[in-house]
Image (cartoon, rainbow, N blue to C red; front, side, top):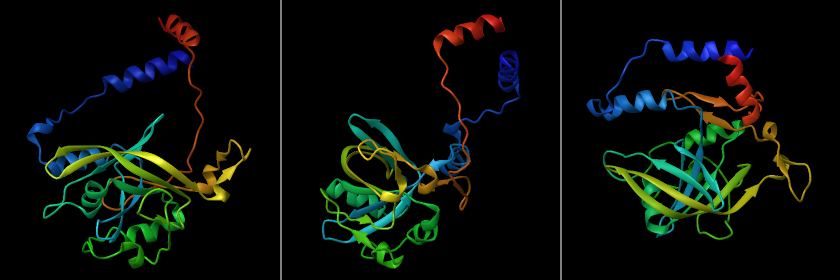
Length: 231
């Protein structure tokens, strides 16, 4: 089995490849390649509030966790041709946002908030979604979402014309009771109950995060034995 894995890896490396010079490609062509291969991507259903009190909700799949001490998440917001996206404008102005996670049961509601509505339109109302107040920040959280993270911006990085990466510290987390299991003092997450969706390729492809397998992390002492055997 060990020798088979080494040979398989060699075959993967030696397959014919095609080179793409990103500097010579359009942004749309770069996006098509990257977004169709870097997947599945978790979805941040972001709720923000403008300085004058308007609520905005929109999903973003350029999102992930980047630490736990401090607990930080990062959110990538791409450019829009005419003006900054409401999410970016609100986070820049207030420094606050809530990331809600998206279970399969809420995909239609999430999709409804994708619409490019004017800034004064509350997408939560548009999608018929109830909200709950946050503990430490002004934007509310989506009541039906099984997990919500209240975040405050720590870093703002302009990564391109109108394109930004926001890093936020998670101040408070809210979990639905039915997605938690085990010892109440140190609960685990019931991933089947969570039933999250992820973003895939193209304009409309998503996946459910239920196709799981286990893979034990190797130990260095075992890796040395494998290296000796393979040689």
